[in-house]
Length: 287
Image 1: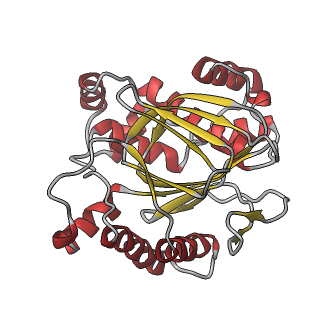
Image 2: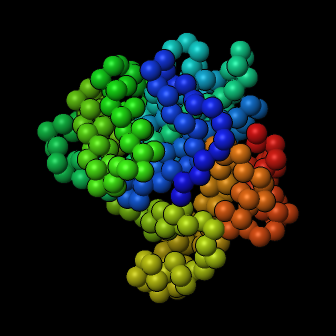
């Protein structure tokens, strides 16, 4: 999905100029989003689907997954966070005191990209992977240039997904050469696979039967496997849709009814109730 909001360019560094866009998805290659808010926001149990690079442009970001806590302030120096795939963390986003805004860029890469990189560059893999799911990375010139190249390419519709694939692999290689790698994605769980399917089309009228067919199993088998992973189809569907809605509210100027429709809800009231139940506040208060 790709959406654009009418707004000026987002200055990330002095030499970085990216247009402010809604989420951009390159199927099986990468996803790009640029959250921008003006109020302090708490996002409990936020799910990072794939390996994520998060650039904090302005404001303060706090991450906590129960085992570790990280607080970064963009005003002190440019901050780049490396977040392992399938990390779930409580996030607090605080706008900068001077500008009154919180801005960040998220580049998410799917498990398939990590798996292919590991298979192609075994000598660059560490003997031990960090046990901290999110950590800061020094944004030196080499990495800064490579990351900007990938971000601009993701936005450029003239760049094919095939070419984007190689640019993402080169970014992973740049990180690895400087000693930074993501934890292995591991064997995909049914929950993970289903999240990926739903996130590609959250507005679709999903049923458990539809999902089971995509996963090449019966509906009863799907429900049994989800129960084994301590979740239910309807709960997972709502959670993915609410994550999608939160990102749209942070990255576009769409109205709440528009966001609701793009997240699979015809009723604004029902959408708002589900959103409040998930995050603790209404959609209209996000911005």
